[in-house]
Length: 499
Image (tube, rainbow, N blue to C red):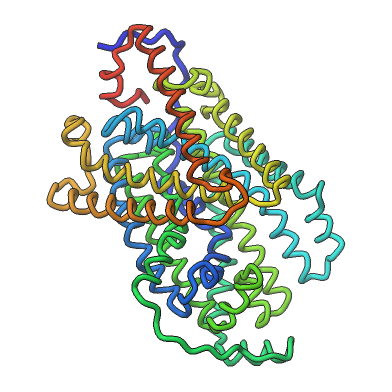
């Protein structure tokens, strides 16, 4: 039996988040600026994809749905804060659970800073169509841009500190606003066609749509697009991290994961189909070679400045929505490690009034603030995004593996699973998820290592391995400390942490 903990009792987290708040957490973590850029920059990243971006999205949705089913099964049995860490540490290996979730925490914290740093650029783009050039220049200035990013970030830190009730009251309306403004793109795209765009381009710039005819892309081209498009679905994991604050968690966590993945997948495809309905892929492919192409930039040829501003505002709201959801996710990971005793105990503190892990929230925000400063100094933030993709693919693969190992390693918890209870369904779904996410990880790593960069540390893979090494050292030190205090570590990791 484990020795009694010498740590003082902490106030419990409070289960305030309902189904809508949980679904909003996943949706807002997934829908960001990527929807306005990835379907169009894809023409540069995967040459020859042409007019087949939508079928490539459908292929990418398959591993996302399988990974979501794995998460839903585990969430139904282990509804605790720090979801993915708890799942792997109880159903696979405490070491793998910690190091994978540590790299996930690091990547997400960096991504929070990246998102914050990009927000002033979207505000600038909203000011330009309105003729507010002076304001736009100020927003993009060397002093204002990082300060605005830091101000936005710490505003949402305060929201997260004040508790999940305020968090839910803010996030759900923002999600609705994001969908409404994004709906402008969908309506505009389907009410205009290629002829309209060709006429608008000729009137504005005096040139015609490039004439390009090619055969349909082969299967290898479609598969090459899959890792990039799969990244669009990264984020539903945030729902699992909120497991300690969900009402009726065994029901609501799996439902919220399913709602988030299906709604975001449908929205991505509808949004992409709308833009390509109005804008010929030949023009998108041509422009993607010389500049970053976005949905507002493309539909700006067809819409008035006011409607263009609405599209840019929708992109900005989507970005802003990322912050509270991702802050919740990273802080609950840190809280769960500390609560298990494999990270300094101070990070498991819960505010006596707000009932939030305030130390973990602030610590994660400090790392995100460093990311903002780093993005500003370096002038590039894509390394942080690549690290996040690597860490999330590893996490998704481990979740699928955990579904397979849980019945053998922890039969008591396996008996609590209410999603895919039949092994005849669970095993092939989890095995397929493991195979596909592992394959995507391999493709992502090979692409990263073969990329031409100025120095080795601009490759995300070796940087991720360094983070993994740091996590391993932390784990070994803290586990040894637990053993010295007489804690039966194996018994501790066989059961769920207390509420």
